Image 1 (tube, helix red, strand yellow):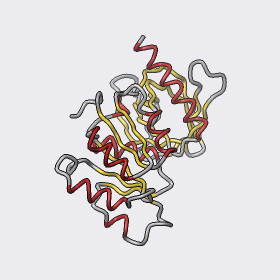
Image 2: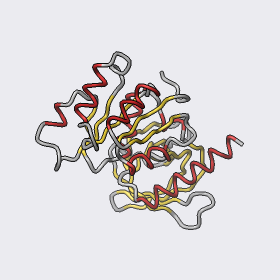
Image 3: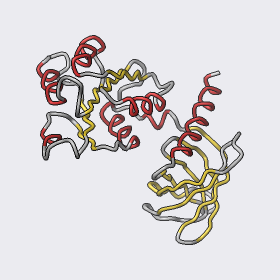
Image 4: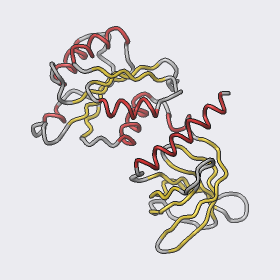
Length: 234
């Protein structure tokens, strides 16, 4: 397994995605570099030897296909994974899928999906490094009923909760919980993606993944995670 520590990602011509990735990888030893053109990207690739390259489909000078072609022609960058972010309205039919890249993700970019792809390509479980232990009361609604649970940890991707209710994997929930230091509760949608039976009290552990997290809620969760991570380091 790769270890985050000296990995570099080259991101070409996408300031919004750059800001989000840079924030999510804060403190994880992964450097994200954003450049505006394919020519500059190729030079950076030669100098920095990145672990992964992410390309916008429409670049200022070279096409994404040309950047990939030159990378694959160079023995030093031939095996570097490439993810292309493309706009279906701009790309001609079949163009993106025909590129010699490892992944082609359509816009608007789902950052959670992109993080999953990056994690899989680098074999670095980013979310695991950002899971913070908590002890929070959680209320959630499911099929019209109001239920209660306790959250045992939280990451930018979801919660692990303990409850007496044996919900099935795939169950959709609406969660309500208040993070320490925050005055108002977060109300966020989620889906059960993991279930284990705990040894005592006929309780269940549920891994709940956030679905369609509102931007303001995401900001609050990320701020909480960063602050708790800094406290651990200190």
